Every structure is written in C-alpha cells, then in structure tokens.
Length: 115
Image (tube, rainbow, N blue to C red; front, side, top):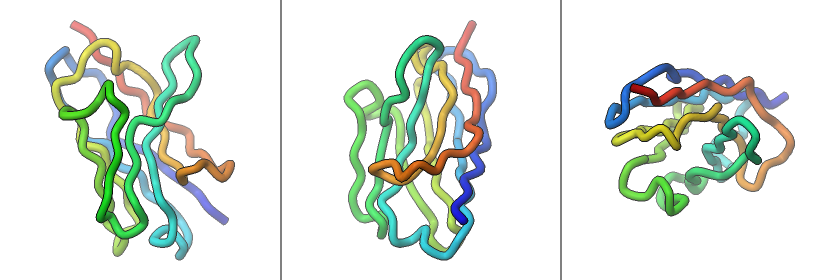
C-alpha cells in the first residue's frame, strides 16, 4: 500500500520561503521517480519539479526554475521541496506523487502567499 503524507505548507508573505516534506510509506520509494505537483483553485494540477529515483537528476517547470529545489532522502522515504522567493502565483495545494503519476495521492499541503 502506497501512501504519501505532505507537510510544511502555510501562509507566507511574497518573497518568503517554505520547505515542504512528503513522507512515503512502503519499501519501493527508492525505485520511483518522484515529483511535486500543485493545484490552484480553478486550475488543473501541474507538475512543479521531479527527481530521479537515485536523486541524481532533477527537472523543474519554467515558472519555478531558480527558486525551488527538489531533493529526496531514500533512507527516510522522504521527498522535499525548498521554495524560495515565493509569489502570489505559487499559492496552491501541493502534492507529491510518482512521476508519471500512478494514481496515489496524499491530502496535499496548502501554500498561501499573500501580503
């Protein structure tokens, strides 16, 4: 059974930072490419960043390049997203999942950027 539990969201002012965490259950975490997705109100869920199973390669959506950093700790079955220079456009619910998605989603964590 695969479960993802996201945490670390909150409210922050523009220009602020947050670090999201995703705790994954199961022993197969280290075998999967993982990603962070986000969904803003009225919009489709979109891929923000992904990382290979071993953590050696990352990819970012253009709208977060240079601001967000994805990382993982396979020994802890945990995925991270460091978010810096946040803007109002980053406001969304953030989810972690396999890339490509395999149908498993957590409850997400809300990120709100507002002055």
